[in-house]
Structures are given as C-alpha cells and as structure tokens.
Figure 1 (tube, rainbow, N blue to C red):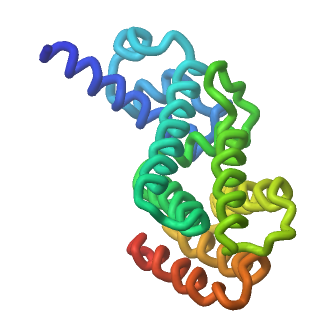
Figure 2 (cartoon, rainbow, N blue to C red):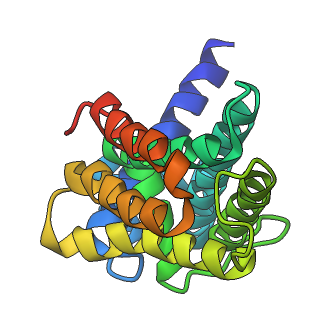
Length: 215
C-alpha cells in the first residue's frame, strides 16, 4: 500500500511538473529531460509512468476534462438557474487555472495542436456541449432572449473564454483571468439577458469575481 501511494504521488508530481513547463514554454519546447529535472525524479521513474511526452499531454488533458465535468455536475446538483450554473462553471474553471498549472497547460495543449486520443474528446467540443445545454435551459427559463442562435452564442462564449487566457498568457498574470471573465460576462449579459433580469446576473458576475478572491 505504501509503495502504491508513493507511485501515485510520483505520478502526480511528474504531471504537475510537466503541466507547469507546458504552460510556460509550450509542448514542443519542453523535453522529457526538462520534466525530469523540474519534477526532481529519475528518468526511470518518469518512464515507469509515461512512455512518451504525448502520454503526459494526454494525462493532463484528461485531468482537465475531469475537472470540467465535475464542475458541471456540481452546479447541476445545486438547483441553480441554467445561466447561473453556466457562469459558475466558467468562474470555477478560471479559479482552477489560477490555483494550479493543470488547466492552464490543458488549454495551451488544446490550442497548440496536440492530438487528443479517443475516447477523450477535445476540450472545446466538451465545453461547447456544456455551454449549449445550459443556454437551452436559460432560454426555457426566460433568462436569455428566446430568439438567440444557441449554437452561435455557445461558439462565441467558448471562444471568448479561451481568448481571455490565450491573450492574457503574454499580457498579464493568470490571476487577472477572473477579472477578464467578469468583463466578458458583463458584455454578454447586456446582449443576451432581458432588461428585467439583467441586474441579477450583472450582480452575480461581480460577486463571482469577488468570491475568487482576486477582484
């Protein structure tokens, strides 16, 4: 049992070290030797868990996918409106990106052309489904205008969410992402939400930013 626990801890250490390097330097510019040095493990330990750098990338994207699905399930279990659930999911992903390198690296891998191995889906496809289903719910709940093109809005939201990090990666610290996300939601809410319900969601965006502790 102790040996298994050490092996799991070593694997997690390697993944975190790889994620940090992939996020800061990119997949192509990071070697397995870099990861070994950064993780403070032996090459044998790395190869015991991962046969190739691509396997590490896949493990990181799998963890990113798991976090996204877990957040979506958690919000669905809380009895929130569809729009509030969607907003909380995006801020939850932003918070996880600030707290550790896994989601940041996963996003950089997703935008860097690293192939996704089935049955894992590309994160953007997964996020599109998460956004689309909640937008459809928000239409039924009259929290967004009934005549919106749900597919177009979902594509716009995913692109905007990804863009806050892609642009911010070279322009500002990752701790700024919740603020950028709040700015995105302020624009979206003014365009999508009926006037009678707008104040509630504008206030929610500001509150979610404060809850992140980074306002």
